[in-house]
Length: 279
Image (cartoon, rainbow, N blue to C red; front, side, top):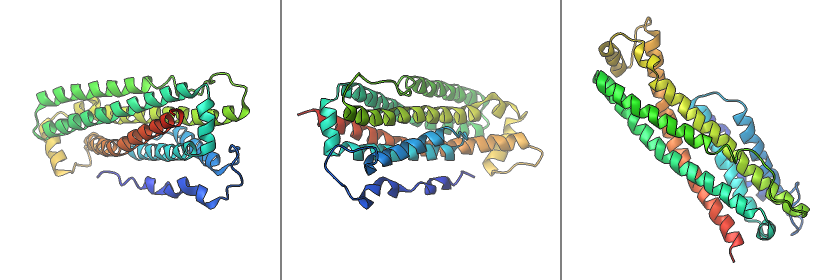
């Protein structure tokens, strides 16, 4: 059976609205104790903690995408602060931040498209599997492995911005503070995205591996078991094959849904940043 993905219920969406419980003490540039910065720092830490404890499951990927979504909301909140906007208009590093955001937007746009292709490939594999068509299975598996390579390339393309490198030199402490936390949020998003892409690739590779399809001597027998959703207790490897199929099914559904949401969120972030620096 497909996993229930109950893990997402542990992520409190209300965390992004903590600012409503605080009293804004002044209109000066926010210091590190400002609730908007504190919330963003908390989301960054949550994402990095998630990435540091990989599980390689669809539930883990779901949790990661949900964490990234919360981080994007916290960053959007900070960008709406007038004092943040005033700082970014004068920041020498704002173009670099915009470029990094654009790279993330492109990566997620490609990821969503690639997930749709993976969904089609995996569906075709299962259909051919039920029909006991070994030739078509081999053909569709080849296509699926090609998609896995594309996902790996997307992850590789983000490695440059996943490291929190120094921004353009600046003597303004307040500017360094604001651009620094924004840069860290972008780097953390890229870092977690690489982990998510790798997780999807790993689950797909497990479902399309030769081990999954080469363990049985009879495609007909295994296909019948698959269509009936039951196996003999002596067919442990067959059971694992079904589990890999179902895990990838769940992963694709979650990646399609959350990936699209993160993609739209990143677009909105970049538009907000552009509006800030454009008169």
